[in-house]
Length: 391
Ligand SMILES: Cc1ncc(COP(=O)(O)O)c(C=O)c1O
Image (tube, rainbow, N blue to C red; front, side, top):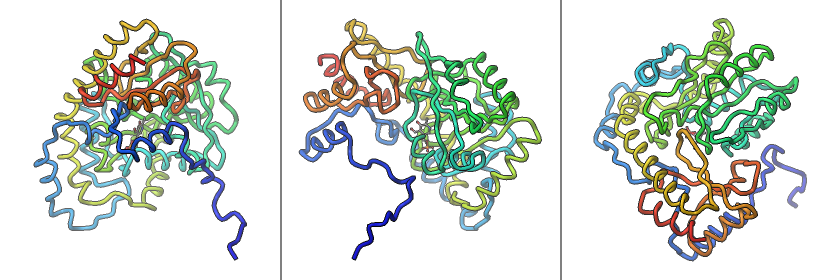
């Protein structure tokens, strides 16, 4: 007889049935209906030109035939990450402060494990990236939201940060620029956050995967040079070089010297326990990372072109609003008052075969936001937006 006693951990008690929006999508796909996907965020499917010969050649490295386990990752790869911060962001980063991981998600799990006992708390931005909930569940960490307020740009509501603090708070998570709002942290916000971290003994965890996708030409400041608070800066090949399939990311640890050193010693043990990166990709890393010089201009051009088109169309429809953003891969639309994001997205999908994300996926405070990927190929984007505007 099959036991009815619970077999699985509570942390995996997720609601696994598809929501109404996912269900509508499944039905259309099962019927073979062509869909205009305005949520495309996999750069390898978006029609960009990669130097395929250089990428494949990067793996022809005899060194990769030897196993040399290094918890932080192989030095030449870490030195390449340091060069990126120096050349692209004018920031000195010691290769010894870098730990390579297979993804930013893995980097998050290392940092959560380093900082948190079970049910300790990390403050996260709202609206924000939905994967955080799952990452936190898996590490037994509790996420407490703080609010980003919109006033022709997004700003941290510091009252909400203070209200969210408890004796269990271990860190404040920042996404720079945030997904999906496209907002970078301002210098004054950074100053206030550092002060708060110092006073409350907190760390900063900063996700910079979209750092290089700014709508203005000047490079944006990175937190990888922040020594005021214990700071973990996360990024990777996935967005910076548009190579998510290569699975290389990193975490840079900075801060007051003794604290940062002690964090690194512990992170090294966590990384040593998994040794998750493979040698061929680490040896290929410098050539793979080089691809950013080819990919970033194409992507920035795509983001600008799609955003300009969206702005032009939306401006003719006074009822919809395109929210201001400074960078990132997404656009946020505000629907006319009274419409629900979920109903709108489902109707758009079922009647016009256009896929967008309802804002509640990202925990917007109202129910009238839609999120659209600016990475979408322009022909699909234009047709999809013109159908959306008609609805
Ligand atoms: C804010 C943010 N961080 C991290 C990631 C995932 O990065 P990786 O592929 O390195 O795990 C994403 C993916 O969309 C993201 O939006």
